[in-house]
Length: 219
Image 1 (cartoon, one colour):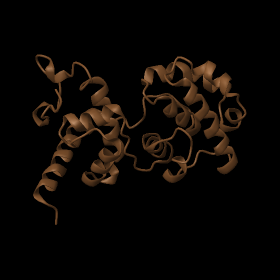
Image 2 (cartoon, rainbow, N blue to C red):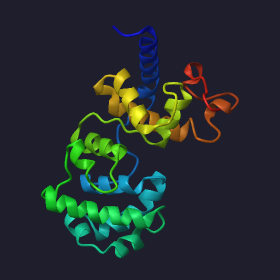
Image 3 (cartoon, one colour):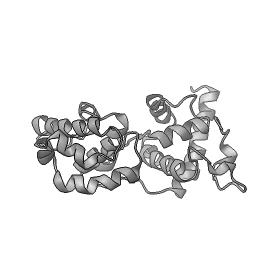
């Protein structure tokens, strides 16, 4: 039997999901890709970087290296040249090449579909793995990016912004079938409404659909 406070928290998750899912029904990532490998690369590039910045460099990157085989044979310096406008491009270029080589050597040239295998790839954390398995393979994925962690904290659904703890909290309070949709809806809400600076609730009048449910933690 669940404790009263757990039931209350679960109800808050359900109320928030009930508001956001119809408003933001698109369950696709905002970064551009045309294959699982391209998506994997794009999400690796997206760490501490905006979707727009990633989308600006991936066309030339994927024109040069469209698949794991071509990326595995690339020189890291050549990849760096193509992604130099993205933050931490030295590290990310190395991760792209090493991940492609591991995919070729251990997974037959195909992006693995299982979380534990994805997490073995250089530069791949749980956010990236969850996005890949949900977008490419249709598995439920809890994608905790900076927007999601900010909203979960501001909404009072978790006491800090630790991504692993937030993923666990969402898993405890929502059905599996809502994981992916809820992640993307929170992402859009954070990107367009509950921004890091000047969130909509501070405007007059407020345009935030969650205003009555939000304690505005941290604001």
